[in-house]
Amino acid sequence: MPKNVREKNPAVSRQGKAARRRRPPVKVLEFSESCLKDGAGYRRVADIVKSGTGPRVVVVSAAEGVREQLMSGIERARSSELSAAEVVSRLADAHRGFARGAAGRAEVQWELHRDLEAELGTLSKLLLGISFTGEASPSALSRILSYGPRLSALILVAALRDLGLKSESWEADAIGMITDQVAENATVDLPLFTANFRPFERRVRGEEVIPVISGDFGCTQTGRISGFGRNGSDYSASVVAHALGAGALEIWKDEDIFFSADPRLVPNPVGLECLSYAEAAELAYFGERILHPRALEPLAGMTISLSMRSLARPEGPGTRLTPRGFVKSDIVKSVSTTDDIAMLRIHGPGVGYKPGIIGQIGRSLADVGINIDSVITSQTCINLLLDRKDARRGLKQISDLAGGVIQHVDLRDDISLVAAIGEGFLGKPGIAARILGAVSRENINVEMISIGASEVAAYIMVQRGLAKPTVNAIHREFFG
Image 1 (cartoon, one colour):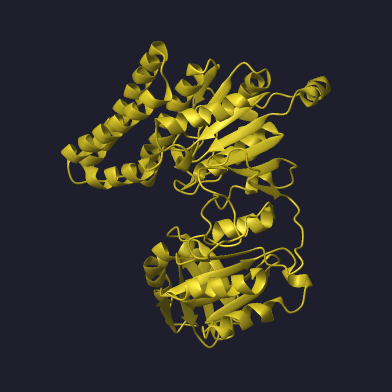
Image 2 (cartoon, rainbow, N blue to C red):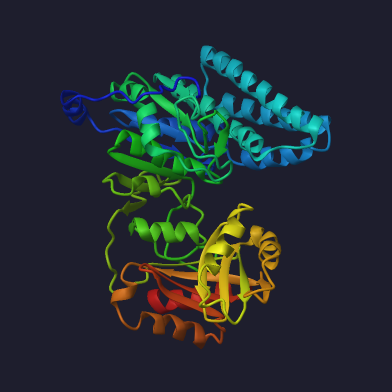
């Protein structure tokens, strides 16, 4: 059991619950790596936190580019001890620079320097351990990646203290953010974390401190570090908001938030003021990596106000995400695309009616840690959408099942998925015809279409290289 975690969940009296309801609601603010580019970025974030009132909790990711440096460092450490030392040296120089820009007072700088050096010393030992063995387990990789947000939290705490605020760094494993045993895409045990967090919650609600929690990771019951993947601090913040029953959750990015299409693909897209959780989740899964795909899971069944905010325009409203959405007159609110997919086509005359075949395929892929994004079936072919990075491993795994009902398996990794997102797809006739008509007029061949699997999305598959004209064609149809 990690330190500072209580094993028992103490009973809460009716009086205690009533007092808790009378207290001002807690706001949770999460700042992604794009907000933390340099010392000035940390200072801007500290100013935003200071401008608020009432009890507040802050969650941070690693500084911009640090996750990539750590991943590169892990690979380089496998080859030589010298490479590991060089990686730590570069990270140390970068964070010392962030520190100088984030805080000015000498006593704050001294404490920050001491804390940074301690964390960097531990990180150095971990990377050197990899260089000696040439190997790193998934848990070891997650532990090393956790040092990005750990270092980031220390710097933001210093920036807040420099502004005269009481702030502390709370590491996710030390506050009992317990997860399952998955090392790289872990799931938090929400009831257990809520119980573990209660002693810390009292300090938050009493406004004794503004804690800065290191995002992106948690730990297992045995204390092993488990990661949440890229943009994982979004998920961390949502978990904290759940545990607190927060009044509001703000997720801050440096760029503008949700649009009717990616501005890099479509000229002058429309900014979106409001999306439902379901719409935002679809956009997060397919192309719009602005939000962690699972960030909305901990909020299910709650009434927490969630807004996406832009550090570039802090006075702007951003995009509100609500549990229940609204139906736009012509349904489609956004068009998105991703190239980060591949399709396994599993052929056999009996695959469509053989009991248990899809379960067998799913178990086989799960055994090697591969997630299935979507399944589209016919009587003679099962089509699986996977992350592109898993495609070759998936092909090998399923090919080993061939010989019975499964005759052969082939891979398509030259495709793009385009999604049209909006509440009300199942209740308004003619939307699919408009989508297909718009694409057809551009002489683009649709290789596969799926409508009805989701109440808020229609998906079409096109050859890679045709995603941009496809997105533009659909966008013109619905937005002019």
